[in-house]
Image (cartoon, rainbow, N blue to C red; front, side, top):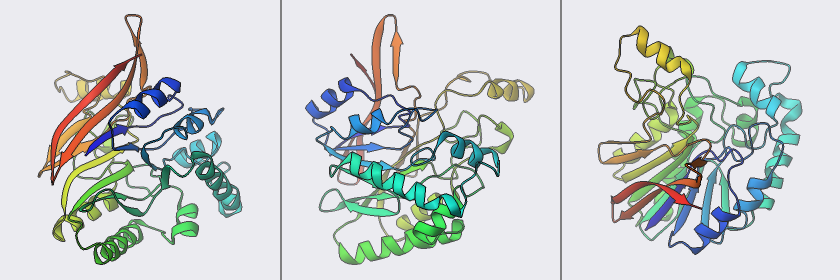
Length: 307
C-alpha cells in the first residue's frame, strides 16, 4: 500500500499536482488540511483537489471552513472575531459547500474510521485543531460533535474505535490522520510538533490524539503511521533566540524535524509551507511518500517532484 502525504496546503496545489498524482501509483492520498491560502482569498486549491481520481482523505484544519478574521480571532482570543453560537450555521454551511465541491472521491472531516484494506483502516481524529493546551473552536465542536473538552474528544474517538472493531473484526492495523499532531514527542521547538512561535510552551501536540493512539495500541492494534501537520517546517525567528539563550546547539534551527519514530510508529509532519518552491530556477512540489506492508512501514521518503 502506497500513500502520498500532503501537509497544510495553504493554496499551493495546482494542475501539475493533479496530473502527477493522477498518473502515480499511489493507492491513497492524505491531506492534513488548511487548504485555503493564508488570507482566504480563493478556494482554487479545493477545486484542484476535487480533480484527483485517487482515494483522498482530508482532515479539516483550523483554516478550513472559517474566514481569515475568524482564524485570527480564535488563535489570539479576540472575542469580536471569535466563532460564537451565532456563526455556527454559517460555518456549517461553508463546510457542507466545501464537501460538495470536493466531490465523492474525497472523504473529509473528522472523527471518522474508514477501511483502506481488509485489515487496515484510517482513523481521522478531532478536526479544526489549533494545537497546545487549549481546545479550539469549542462552539463548533460542541454543536457538531457534542465535544466540549479534551476528555469528551477522547471518549468520542474511543467509542468510534470500539464500534469499528466490532463491525470489522479483521482490522488489526490503524493509520491516524490529524491536523495537529499528538502530544508526547516534542521537547524542543525543532521537534516534529514543538512550539516554535512560543518556544517556552514546549510540546504543542494534542493530548486527546495521544490518548487515542495509546488506547488503540492497548487494544492490540498495530499503528505503523501517524500523520498530521499544522506546525509548519519553517521555524519562527524566536526559535534561534530561544536556543541562543539556552546555549543550545544551533544546528538546523530554521526547519523542524518532519519525521520521527517511536515504539514502532512513524510520526510524519508533511507541513512544508509553501509546498511548491523554486530552487535554482527549478520548480519543486513537495510531499511525503510512504509504503506500508502488513503492519510495518517499508519505506518513507520526502519527495520534491520537479515540474
